[in-house]
Length: 399
Image (cartoon, rainbow, N blue to C red; front, side):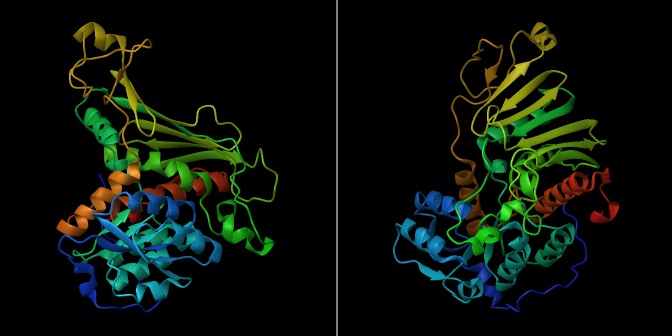
């Protein structure tokens, strides 16, 4: 199994930010962590809204975006005092008041900006997918080596949800038996475009449509489910098969609007099917994990367990599956995994980010697991766009 493995840092430098490393150990008593946000699009402002509900843990003091109208919108979200605004993230990193930084920029900028944050000594919450390329993922692993006082958490927030923790526990305890198939979808019906006030800003605003900046549907959506399977089984895919195309929106985009990935995990005897499309929203988010004793069917905030008939006939009831005081079966023969829906996974992720900043420790979604998933996504896209079968290279891990 791949654990915390390091590959040699290639030494790529992207900014010359070498501030006092003591910044990484900022401990502010019981005061909230002062945090800066780099990238004020949908995801950055979405995180800000969640942090507004956690005033005892975080206070956004600085924001940065290259688009003035996004800065103006984000500034209005602040409910906790004056927020400094920047269009150059280096200026935000020069602000010694900032103890932690959220990076929620287009994917191709995750590595250069994230690496500069790490070199500045700050704690870093780096949105998924961790990096755009394999080389960047391996280099970031090397860059973090030895920085034990700094927290780097990657934005695969479902690793922090009580629901997904419970499912991981169920699988590890054998409730599902031998798991051999995973079926995942994350569908929508729409062109995924954002309004462009100036045609010159098309690629800056709609960066998800262009290969130069984006990993498309695999990186933006399916990476969450790929990451969860990596986490549950402490593994990664070895073989990558994929197909897709621009099948709905013939509008000049480069990333596919209809994709299907099939990933093979030979060490687990497992096949993972991951699909996403922009032409039908009926299924939306689906996540089914199928074993010889039962199936887990997940949404983002709730899930059901469906035992195989063999299990019912052998045991009658399934102990330990639900958090409720008694087993409640629905008309389809399933039982809730938890008694009620969970909160947004980002809330749980930032609650843990705060705890790791205060008390140290490695987040569940960290640079090592983030690299594993980023490489998985990159190889999926390589198979998708090259129309070839791709394989995990043994050089991607040591030990």
